[in-house]
Image 1 (tube, rainbow, N blue to C red):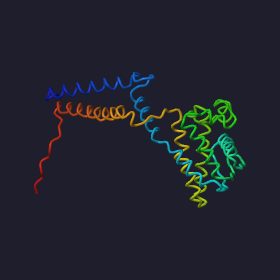
Image 2: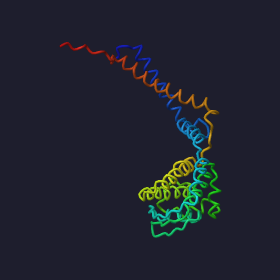
Image 3: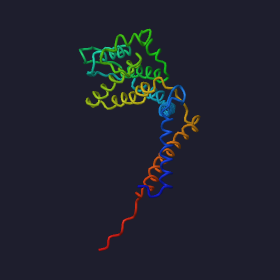
Image 4: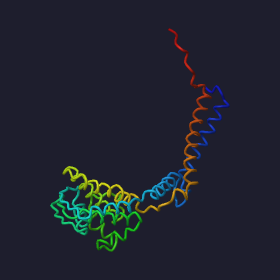
Length: 256
């Protein structure tokens, strides 16, 4: 039963308009056929990429690893990963023996990580062709045909991403193996390349980097709208409840 028609009506208007705006947000009217959520997500991904380029510093730091020999055995999850990882490592000058899912690897850690950094940098700059050509392939489709396998995740839309994923998988296994072998210095080098080069290169591939300072107005507008829109819904519910006579009241203090 409505007890306060004024506040109930105000709350109802706010709630209806809230959902009207929500409907508009989900329409593809925000450029390139995107809806509002996709536009905001894409914008923040671009801004995030613009402030996540640490690869040059990683490459400079990795120079200390040159001449550091390593010898590890790691096990990957799939045969196609073992095959593609072996190709990457061999091209980087390492000696690799593949036995099913297990790879026995030895070589110069600095050279291996340098090759991984080069590929990550090309991926970060959306130059997948450079990565593909480095290993003697004409295009990403040729890599897909050779290394995809039936179990490869659908997210690997392009062949160069398969190679980037193989770098991530073999280096992450090497990192764990080196830690178990108490070679913390070498493990730290591998971990830094993984987190600050290989992962950003893979995750930001295909995304255009944008500067936060050059897009401050758009970014601020999105954040302000988010706060305002949240309050919009909150006041709508508050006024409807108040109109129905459901309100918070301070309880009487119990006396002892």
